Image 1 (cartoon, rainbow, N blue to C red):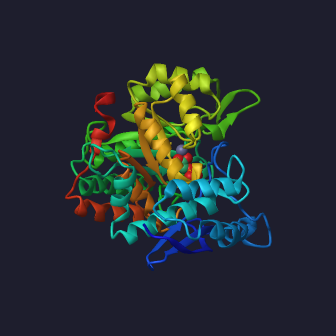
Image 2 (cartoon, rainbow, N blue to C red):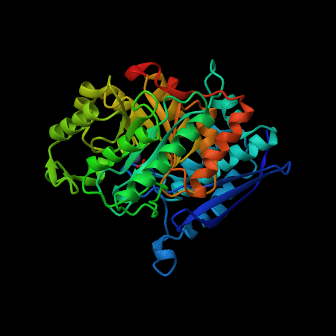
Amino acid sequence: MGKIKQVVGREILDSRGYPTIEVDITLESGHKGRMMVPSGASTGKFEAWELRDQDPSRFRGKGVSKAVAHVNHEIAKAVTGLDAADHERIDRTLIELDGTKNKSRLGANAILGVSFAAAHAEASERGLPLYQYLADRFGDLNAQPSLPLPMVNIISGGLHAGKNIDIQDFLIMPVGAKSYPEALQMISDVYFKTQEILAAKGYQSRLLADEGGFGPHLTSNEEALDILCESVQSAGYKRKDEVAFALDVASSHFYDESSGTYRLGADKQELTSEQMIEKLENWVEKYPILSIEDGLAEEDWAGWTRLTERLGDKVQLVGDDLFTTNPQRIQKGIALKAGNAVLVKMNQIGSLTETVTAVKLAKEAGLLTVISARSGETEDCTLADLAVGLNGGQIKIGSIAGSSRTAKYNQLWRIHHELNGRFTGKRAFHGRFHQ
Ligand code: PGA
Ligand code: ZN
């Protein structure tokens, strides 16, 4: 129950070398909280607005000095004196002060930084780790906080790797792991096998994409799946039972709105929504795929409903660009039976309480949740605590390379010790999809 005494924003660099916002909040007691704000590249149309300066003379137009100024002046004035524990009031104040639907006046980056820095400060005031504070305030009443099952990027394509292939992420889920450290071991085994296999095939295996995965110029999307099959097998794991695959198709980014078709450059195909569904069905038949994110585009609601009818009891169908962590869009998805899982990215909606609302709404409707990082990240670990505190079930951080990614994997490893190893593992799927 600490009163906010000071709010300070500043520019820092993210993992891509572009500016982002860091916010420090100090309470009257002297306790402090800090939040560093992430940033996406393959963003959904319906995301809250990330305010950038657009001044080409600084950081290629990507400076965030205007958003920082909003934190230091208007926002600081409005939230100073508020109770840092009253997250509803803080977020409401920020949203009303902004006055737009998508947080575009003050910037969702400014608002998110303040919203979460307050939670950090209050957790410190109470002497609690953030995950415990979030669990106490917003967590499941009848479940103790537990470590999420990681969904881990191994091969990258799309906007995260210079559009080498169309599918954005080829990921693995160590569903056979009994503990978080065992999950990390399995991921590491597959990661390094993939590096060896890529090198043996003559691909560039030392250059990493935005999320730390390998970004080779493969000849087709399927080649990535074939390589992953080989890596999992030669790492000594059973495909599907021990290591399952996940895809982030990010199809909004190769969907052509005027013709209503999906244009897969690497496969030299132009597909209708129905044909895209068939392609995904074929991949699910052929490969040990357990999860598909954004298999169809963010506005192809009818396609999403058909996709869910066809594949929804076999695999997890995650809406990222589709839902943009927006309760209204999640509600629409529930009504249309579009998708069976929500990707939760706090900066897509732009505040702590709205993120919590999205997670609760999803869970109450029986949708699974994956708490996710952005492709532009920092050493901030809030994501790890959020996934544990809200019992998100699954977490998507990127690969195990680059300290913006390992910061979060390592924070989970610390929490593993504090929770005496409590790990959700494949229980994240509640027995669905034969898991
Ligand atoms: P982004 O990508 O952070 O660049 O939007 C992540 C994702 O699509 O899941
Ligand atoms: Zn995505």
